[in-house]
Length: 116
Length: 109
Image 1: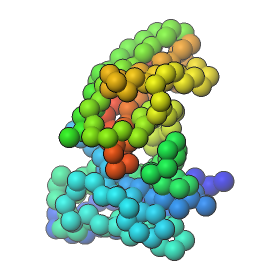
Image 2: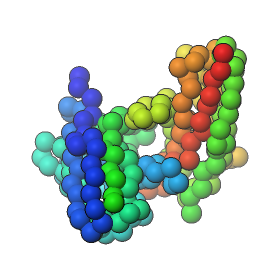
Image 3: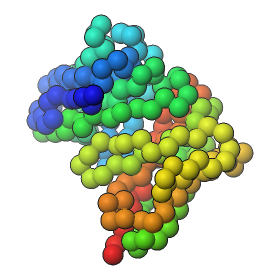
C-alpha cells in the first residue's frame, strides 16, 4: 500500500506570494490533517478535512486555507506569505478521522517551504 | 488553554532503559499519542493511551495517569536507531491534537 505523498517536497517563495501544497492520502483513508512544524513552535495543527468538509481548524490566520477533493486528495493554500511561514508542512491521513479514538495517523514526508 | 511539557533532550546508553515523561494540561481529553520522528523524516505513530495504565508494544511501553495529567514512554534495550525526537500529543476536547515540543533522545554506544 502506498504511503502518504506530498508535493512539492521543497519550495522557495518570496514575501507576499501565495503557495499551494498537495497531499495524497493512503488509499481508502478519508481524513487528511495538515500541520506546521517549526523549531520554535514544534508541530501545530492547521486543519482537518473529512469527506470534503473541514472538520476542525487550529489557531492560524485566515491566510491559511485548504480543501479536499472527492478522491480524498487535499490541498493547502497560504496567501500573502510572511517570513514566519517558513516551515515544514506535514499532512497526515487516517481512516476515519481524528474524532475516532485510537485512530492512527500516517504522516507524509512534508513540504519544506522557505519564504525569502 | 493547552499545555504539554516534555524534556528537551535526553541521552542514554545503548542497551539501557530510558523513560521520557510528558505532563499535560488540556481542556478535554480524548487520548494521548506518542510519535517518533527521525531527523528529516515524518513522525511515525508509536502508541495511544486513553485509559489509565500501561500499554506495552515490544520494546516500547506507554503509561498514562489521567488524574495526574501525566504520561511516559519507556524504551527498553535501547538501540542506536532509537536516536530520534519523541513527540507527546494530546487529543483535546474537540479532538484537535496538541503536540509537545518533542524530546530529542541521543543514544550513544
